[in-house]
Length: 441
View 1 (cartoon, rainbow, N blue to C red):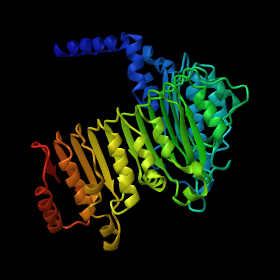
View 2: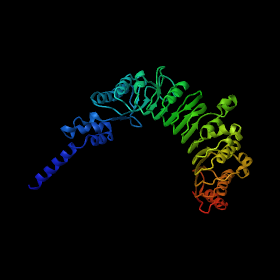
View 3: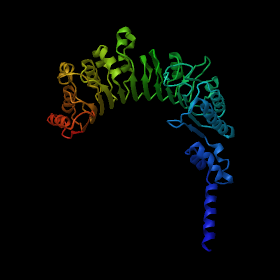
View 4: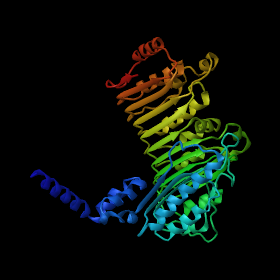
C-alpha cells in the first residue's frame, strides 16, 4: 500500500515536467515527429492539446511504393490525402518555415494552389513540392515527357513566397512572370523534371543573388543551352540533355558534378555543342565529377585545347571513361596535366570491347603522361576488367605519384578469382614512386 502513492507522485511529477518544457524544446520534439504522431501528442495532457498547431515545419511524405487502388477507389484515396493536409493547415497557427509535400496526386489538383496561397502568407522559407504524377498509366506513357498531363503548373501566388531560401520542385511547370523580381533570399534550388524555358531558368538563377547550391535534373528531349550567372554558387549538379553550358559569373564554385546525356552525333552538327569551354569556368573547383558522355564530348573536340585549362584548386576528381577509346584517354590525360594539386581520384571503367579495340591504345599512358601527380594520395577504380590499358593506367599512377598511399580496385562481378589473382600479381610487380603505396582489392 505504501508504494502506490510514491508511484502516483512520480507519475504526476513526470507529467509536470513534460507540461513545463520550454516552447522551443516542444517545437523541436514535434518537428522531428511524423505529422501524424505530432497531432497525436494532443492526448498527452490538456496543455499539449494544441501544441502541434504551432509547429514551424510540416512534412507530408508518401510511402515510396504507395498502395495500388482500382480506378474507382483512387479518387477517394487522393481525397483523403488532400483532406489531411487541409485540416492541418486549417488548424495551424503561427509561421510555417518549412513545408514538404511528397504525394502522388493528379497534376490538375486545384487544392495545391490553395496550399501555396496559404503558405505565401505565412513567410514560408523552405518549400519542397514533389508532386508525383498519379493521373497516368506509366505502362502506356512516359511520365518523364514534358506535358501538362503529368506536371503541376505553379500558380502566380508561388512567386509571392519572397522569404524562401530552399526550394525543391519535381514534376512541375514553372512559368516566370514578367514582373517577377526574383527570390533574394534563395540559397538552395533543386529542380527535377521541371518544365521551364532556357530564359526562365537563367532569369531565375540570376535573380537569386545568394544562390549557393543548384541541382538540375531534366529529361528534355531537345537539348538546351544553359548560362549560369551565380556569384555565390558553391555546388552544382547537372543531369540530363544540354546543348551547351557556360559560366558567366561563378567565382566561388567549389563542387561541380556533370551527368549530361548528350550524344556524340550532336557534335558534328553544331560547334556550340562542344563542352570544352565549360572547363574555362571551373578554375576554382575543388571537386569535379564527369560522366562518360561529357568525356566523349571533350574527346571529340580538339583535345589539345584542354591543355590550356588548369585546375589549381582541384583536389578530388571522378571520371567514368573507357580505357579502350583513344580520344577519352587523351582527354583524361589533359585533365591530369592541369590538376597539379589533385589528392583523390576515382575512376569508373567502361572498357567493354574486343581485343582489336584494346591493342591500338596499348602503351598510350606511358607514351603521353608527361607530368607528376605530386599530391595524389588515394585512387579508387571500379568495374575493372583487367585489360592491358587499365593495368598500364594503374602502373602510370604508381610511377608518377610520389606520395600515393592507397590504390583500391573493384573488379566487375563476372571476374573470376583466378583472373583477379593473376591481375594482382602483375600489379604487385609494377614500380612505385611511393614506398607507402599499397594496392587493395
